[in-house]
Image (cartoon, rainbow, N blue to C red; front, top):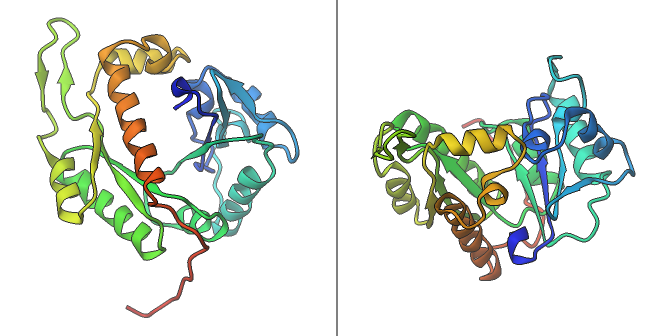
Amino acid sequence: MPAKGSRVGVSAAATGGESTVPSTLGGTVAGAATALVGGTEAGALDAAAAAGGAGLVDAEQPMVWRGPMVTQALTQLLGETRWGELDYLVVDMPPGTGDTQLTLAQRVPVAGAIVVTTPQDIALLDARKGLQMFRKVEVPVLGIVENMATHVCSACGHEEPIFGAGGGARMAEQYGVPLLGSLPLDLRIREQADGGRPTVVAEPDGRLARAYLEIARRAAARLASGAAATAFPTLSASDD
């Protein structure tokens, strides 16, 4: 999205301290902390503002938080960071359907959710629960991204679906949402992320970058077509 001129914020809702967003975008754990102090400016890298839970504590310190603390931290992160003028704010969610997801749905008018899964059945079980949760709290599901769809051999370039084939496409068809795209398990993606230069920055004209850009284009098109939340959802509890 930044490559197309959009101003994009990237935040991690991983309030347990496990966020990799700052380091992946070339920042440091210490540098990310400035974005979490109320009223300070978020950092910027290649037109993307980034903040994440990794800056709350030292990288090796575990954060054992109960639900109310998670809710407070996420609310502060999203509400007290000066994001500036953004076209999109992308929030990286942890797996599951717990306090973090409910807090985001209740406190923020979320325009849409993207479900990321790997192709194998055991991963699809969690992905289905996540998709159904977003529907239950009236957050539009923009589509599904299949990660690690194939393994690419770094020696010969041979591609093999080591986690199975077509899981994301089958799930998309089952729930009537688009498959936004598939990404390979490729050594270069890991090396570039660890080096602080994500693939779309390190090799903007490469095949891998084009896959990411196509996913972003399709997600933006879904938002522009009207798949957006206009109000906070009403949640109710039941004994079911």
